Image (tube, rainbow, N blue to C red; front, top):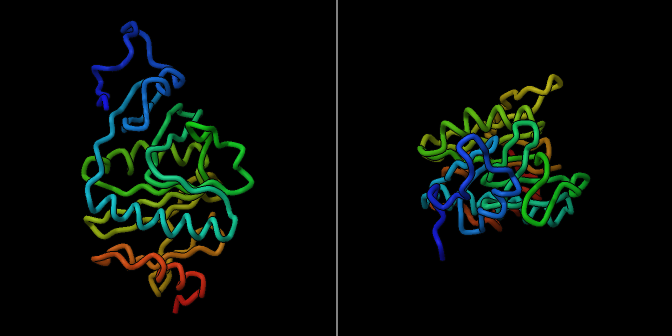
Length: 212
């Protein structure tokens, strides 16, 4: 396996930038990188806590969505191309509703997901709360979760009528209800358990609607 670094980027003139198509050729499935307005941004490998939480959320979301036939769920590394910026991001988890499946291409999602989940790490906090927040809002991603396992903080944003993100707090029982994944809800305390709860137990509770 060849590890890609900035030194392996295609040689272009100093005044030129890499096109998205060139980036797709350069970037393979073993390379963690994003493309922002013609420039490549390498992504650091995820830590154990980050990956464990990502796998947990991916499992319960994917199983719920597949059972209900609601759409399509993927995890990083899978690119999401946002033409408004332009950028090619690798969200930790993304969800596309059934009516928007035409956006899915073999190697990337051509347009915004309906829901994006980013799990914050010390290396990514600036991008997740800054650059990506603005890009996702401007691109019309209807729902954005920012989950910080180190601080045990989960923030859930939904686009309002003006196309701006508003913070949606969990209810009095600590339950957050998705606006994009129909009938899906999340008990926030699940995210901080060590070890994380069994996915089959969580899915059973979600299906049964026992939020009280």
